[in-house]
Image (tube, rainbow, N blue to C red):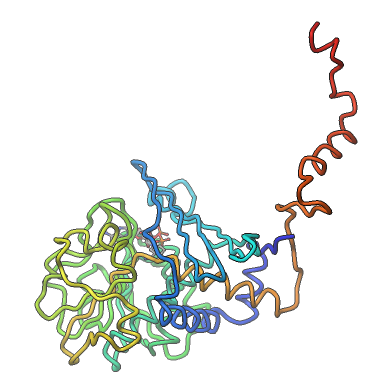
Length: 361
Ligand SMILES: NC(=O)c1ccc[n+]([C@@H]2O[C@H](COP(=O)([O-])OP(=O)(O)OC[C@H]3O[C@@H](n4cnc5c(N)ncnc54)[C@H](O)[C@@H]3O)[C@@H](O)[C@H]2O)c1
């Protein structure tokens, strides 16, 4: 039997722990895994594009556990009352190849993306960062707000979305959360939101090379957390921001980010640093409070691997219904796979065996 974590179970696990603590715990798991980067088998995700979206498979393994995530990105979906991003995933045992867990990953992708963003910002942003612009107030936005409040000490959030209803929804949810000491301001434009911010998070969805941030908006010392540009032809930053002489660009896994990240706009020789090297001290990203740092986030399979393992552990440790799925047959004789199937066929459809005479009639 394979463990199953559905929507209700994730809601229960996150509610019991509290979203901020859940995200912080997940960030610690992700950090541990990025520190042992060389143990992972890595590849850019496999993406199948259409005119309106993308469907991707994201596998990885550390030699003991294997995971993959199925995830889509369809910016037009919200107009039809559907999510832009949905996901599910599997954790498996490398030794036997047997799946251990099938889990929802739609909530979990939002939680892990926020955890990864805040983790990167901890290593890249100015320590004194207190104000963050949050541009794109859709499904990901509350998760980003919670993560940066908890892990970076953000106390001022400056919101902007081209859809005023999205900002109203975010304001309402943040008010209900009552995050300690948080001041929330609604802004009339991206430029207004960005002005004076220490950190700028962009989480917009548009299937094109959008220009959410222009070079004029960027101030010395800012940290940019660019979340929404995550597939070919879908970016958020003007390329000249990346080219600033004082800017340092960090990516998750370079071969994937070259295709999907903001850096797809630049030559393949443009210098970037993989996040693992920031964590392990091989690369120094910020030399002063005046440097501009950019986390060119696209989402990497390792983060989903960490998430599935984290969820599985919480699921096993905590009380509540432990659903399982019978998606792998359990056999007395593993060589008699047909016997297990044929026994059922005989029991249910005894008349389905045509006589030889009938077959030739
Ligand atoms: N990097 C990662 O790991 C990662 C993970 C998950 C999602 N994403 C990406 O993050 C983005 C946001 O995802 P979501 O689930 O919140 O999508 P969503 O559709 O729920 O929200 C996107 C919001 O962006 C707004 N928007 C679009 N164009 C804008 C503009 N020019 N200025 C301001 N706001 C604008 C929309 O009105 C909408 O409210 C998507 O592009 C998604 O693909 C990235």
